[in-house]
Image (cartoon, rainbow, N blue to C red; front, side, top):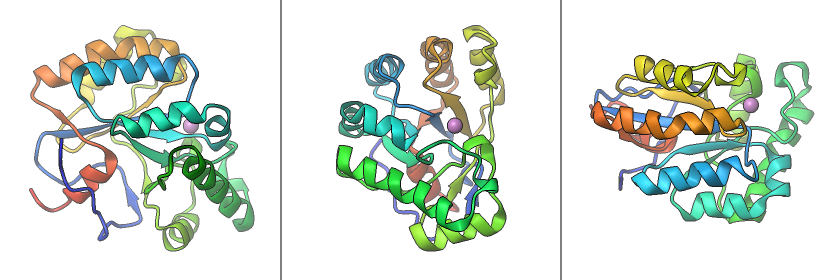
Length: 212
Ligand code: NI
């Protein structure tokens, strides 16, 4: 959808959008993966759905062409660190390096800068969130729906957890490095569409804040 994505008034942390419109943001973490991410992109393209990918910088350097495709097809890229370590146990200079190495890799691969970040394991101190927001301008993006797909419960459980958890403004967490998660997506996307949800990127969702 051609929605505004300028969220300059955003606050430091977001777990969902505040709009009452039936928008949801699908987010896919830990890629790009050489097989599963292109397969997911085909599913998204077939439905003209936009998503947000929280990529790991080291994977970006391994598969820059997939990052280029993500951007070329209108999806959003977010920063998910370079090494996927738990940031709460790192010093400030290491946290900065995780952010900047990943940002640089994304710019090299696709010519765009990420606009938001998601911490691995959802772990980030408030002080670190504020530092990243002030130095990189990234809001920290958490989630409101977690199907626990990384525990590999099977595609039908992943789908049903997402469908039962989704509501207006939801930010939905999933992982495109797991094949069963990608297997769950056609039914998940079609189920959300049939319930009247529209898919937006995280930046589009944040730009809707307060506009209800
Ligand atoms: Ni992750």
